[in-house]
Length: 160
Image (tube, rainbow, N blue to C red; front, side, top):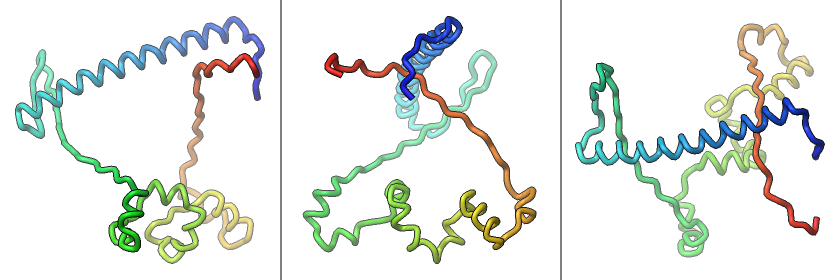
């Protein structure tokens, strides 16, 4: 839907207020990041994983953990290592998700370990008479979520 109609005055005010909050959140996020950097520096100087300072009579708990991540250039390594490349691979959850339709049949024997009930499969099993709806009563929680994003689209070139 590409509805470019002028919204009601109330909706205009709502969208302006929403945008203002987004800008405030951005500024707060930047400020929080700067404060976090100072806390990291302090914890590193203290050589501490945990600190319990008392400020204005309130106890704070500051915890610090340092982690290193390594991102490999997979194409380069695949080329350099050839057949040996497989020896340095481990399952990657992001890649599994991206290729789930392809790998799902391979995971079938391990679904007891790595699987969870799927609403689509539950419905299909009920419809097929494999299980009854009564068997699921009290064994699930249904949550309804609403997602919305508000942003300003990039200006389109005049040629469109």
